[in-house]
Length: 259
Ligand code: ARG
Image (cartoon, rainbow, N blue to C red; front, side):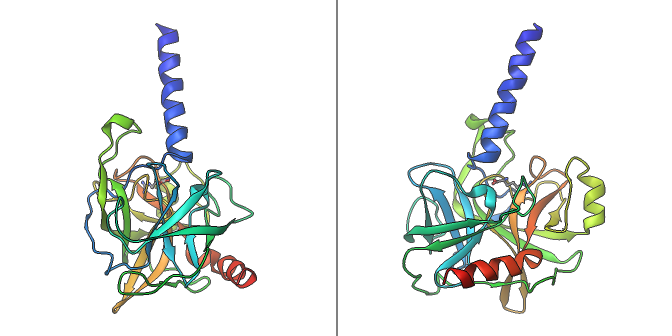
């Protein structure tokens, strides 16, 4: 009997690790369909020929930003200009992915992606401005996060996946870092992280990683975060996002060096 439970635990542990590290097949919980023309900076970053994926954001005509934990040793590509994961848009090969040298689950969870060639901008493909160094959004402000994939938390059980082919978006409030530290006690919440959400049923989830967390200022969006991690999805616990303002200098340096 005991052996059975030990095996069951090991099995869950294995599935969980697999899900966290590579199998990012899930997505936004409690969101609404959103058109690519509303968020034309939204991109898919995925291993070629695999089902699971991450998001990314276009920041200029050759570069995108995503999460470091999305990078994989299998060849990956970028798709832009579509709000359906399985069709449409333009596909680009990747020239290079630069992961933050200090990245360690999940601190400094950022990577910069350089595509081969250049994006052709249109109403469906265009770059987003990034938060200025050290200019974080204010607590309580409503932010938007978008992604493709699952619409419910599935406890990492493959057969329960409800992957959405349609791009979804959900609004989540920015949570004060100190408050977040007190709620997400199982993680070390660093200055390189932003917490957002905490409303049951509304969250990003696996498969949204690497995708944008944006603030709307008038009619323009600004990239303030990158979907990074969470404890399960859509509970009362906030999701954790890479803090773009804290890593902006790194992102700019990589772009400069590789342009
Ligand atoms: N680590 C996940 C991914 O790789 C993202 C999880 C976000 N979780 C959350 N509760 N907001 O896709």
